[in-house]
Image (cartoon, rainbow, N blue to C red):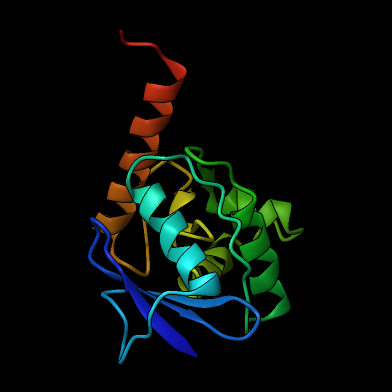
Length: 160
């Protein structure tokens, strides 16, 4: 694994790649030495920087998802499909993976997401719309959702 650190308003992100693509995103920066940006690492850094600058980025960097149960992988795929600026509930994700009574298990799968921000687990909220649970802290989830909401509103409405 090769690590880089990407500046972000929610603290630096550590981004790791292997020979296939991005395999890890960590809040709080890289856990050790970093390498110069190139290939998938440079693409991930560029896409993350554009995302935090307010562009509604559809991440296209190659991903290398290691581990996870079949259920977790199904949940991560559903997270990947949530459009920019939209949210789903844990129950909606559970239903979409064929396990309508597994909302809590969806929360656990979100917590195990190895690629937060790129695979947008922050877009999943409680049944009542509350911001519950987030491996990076609810304060980060709130900032990510506020960023996306602001960008979406600015793009949908002409305020000039």
